[in-house]
Image (cartoon, rainbow, N blue to C red; front, side, top):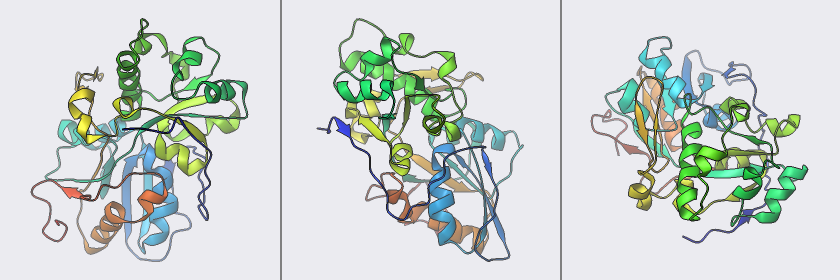
Length: 302
């Protein structure tokens, strides 16, 4: 699959952009409705839920966003009991949450977003898609990434580096050489590191760069984990989480389920997994999505 080397800054007309911050976002400013619907969601969904889904539903919507691995643990341990759970890796449903069913509803890609106003960002822009890793290796770019123990973006960053080492046939192992502990930021604060000047670039999901209007290096499909046809190729990369769970590389697919069902919760869920807002915020929505696993309620299944 041929990709353009560098995707330029893009503005999404009429979009209110959240700049990150704390994981919890309250329900202020929501439209009317007597029933509150709570969502525990992947941090990369936060902006789309707040500024895309929230204005489209009548319920009082409460969104709490963290890394997906953390979300899955909170639910599995009973620390959180939201009405709706949405994760950036459907494998985490099978590993921890174990719902009766879930819906796959969006895809994404790993990119290297950068701030073209900094020296490090300009270095990335200059080398583009062919040699983006070189300024990361020589330390001339301050890089941000997320914690692989807390969210899929973190371990997908490691997968990307491992796959890139093979793709570019390098003598140096990017997965071993580039990551450093000081690079780690919470997923909900990663891109906002550009505004504070803390980082020049970040390994992020494409939607995170698109919705904030940042330039990014678009990586080959063999690396960015976006193409279902390359599932076997991605699966060569693995990561062991602190509890011993081993996650394996796979095409990025977001999943969601309801833990409590009511007419209002169902309406919010359907708007969440089927709403046109997803593509506006940089997510991919294949023609056969939302795709339900067996045992989904008859009122939802296609």
